Amino acid sequence: MEPEVLTLADLDDLLALCRAANWNQTEADWRRVLKLEPELCLGIRASGHIVAAAAAVTYPAWEGFPPLAWIGMVLTHPDHRGHGFARRLMTLLTTTLDRRGFAVQKLDATSMGQPLYEQCGFRAEQPIERWRREPSKKRVHATGVVEPFQYDPALDLPAFGWDRSRLLPSLLEAPGADAALTEGGFAMGRPGAIATYFGPCAARSPLAAKRLANWFLARHHGEVVFWDLLPQNGEAQALARSLGFRPVRTLVRMVRLAPGSTEPPRRDGHIFAIAGFEFG
Ligand SMILES: CC(C)(COP(=O)(O)OP(=O)(O)OC[C@H]1O[C@@H](n2cnc3c(N)ncnc32)[C@H](O)[C@@H]1OP(=O)(O)O)[C@@H](O)C(=O)NCCC(=O)NCCS
Image 1 (tube, helix red, strand yellow):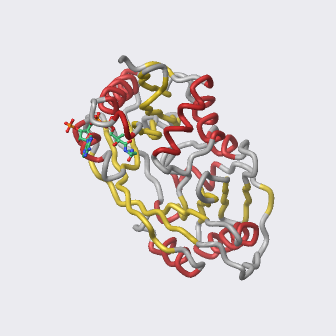
Image 2: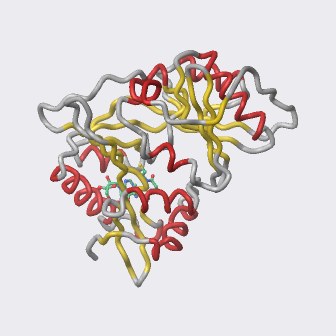
C-alpha cells in the first residue's frame, strides 16, 4: 500500500476518518487544504478506501528566512492503526518537503502522534492548549469598533513570523466563516463538526483581543466554541478564562529545522488564537 496524492474524489473517506477520530474538521476544511496544496495531501488506500492521511500547508520564504511547511491532518482509521501507515506518510511528506526547500517544518502533536514525530526528527517547541466554552444563554455584548476583515501584513507577519496572505482569505471561503478587524488586531472564526472555531486572532494588545473575542461571542454565544492558544501567552489564557472558556486538552508544538537554518522572529504574545492545529 503505497501513499498516493489525495483528490476531491476522496472527500467522503477523509470525512469518515475525521468522524472516526472525533475531529472538528469539516468538508470545507478538507476542501481548503486540497485546494491550497494539491500535491501535499497524501493518503493510503485499503480495500478501495483512504484509511490514512497526512497533509501540509506552506508559507513562503521572505527576507532571507526559509519557507515554512505546517503538517496536519495526520490520522489513521482506528481499524488500520499500528501498520506503519502514518510513518510511511510522514516519511514521504517530510522528505518531499526537504527536497522542495522547506527548511522549517512544524506541527501540533497529539500524545498519540508525538513519538512518531520525534522519530521523524521533530523536537518539542512549546505546549498548545485547546479551550472550550459551553453554550450560554447570557448574551455577550460587542465592545468597541470592529470592521470588515482585510489582510494586513504589518499586523500579521510580525506576529506569526510568516506570510499568511494565502491561508487567511481561504479560511473565509467556508460557509458561515466570520472575520473582523479592529485597531491593532484581527480575528476569524469558522464552523466545525463539533464546535464553532474561534481563530486565528492576532492582536497587539489584550484590549484589542478582548474586543475581537467579544465580537465573536456576541454572534456565537449559544454554541460550543473551541479556542486553541499558546499558554506562553498568559494574556490569551486570562482572556479565554474570563469569557467562560476552560482548557480541555494539551498538545505539543514541534519543529523540524534543517541544519544551519534559522526561523524568522515572531511574537507569540500577539497570537491570541492560532488558526488551527493543521495550520499553526
Ligand atoms: C497517531 C496516528 C496517526 C498513528 O497512526 P498509525 O498509522 O497507527 O501509526 P504507525 O503504525 O505508522 O506507527 C507509528 C508510530 O506511532 C506510534 N503508535 C502507533 N500505534 C500506537 C499505539 N497503539 N499506541 C501507542 N503508540 C502507537 C508508535 O510510536 C509507532 O512507532 P513504532 O511502530 O516504532 O512503535 C494514529 O494513532 C491516529 O490517527 N491517532 C488519532 C489522531 C491523532 O492523534 N493524530 C495525530 C495528530 S498530530
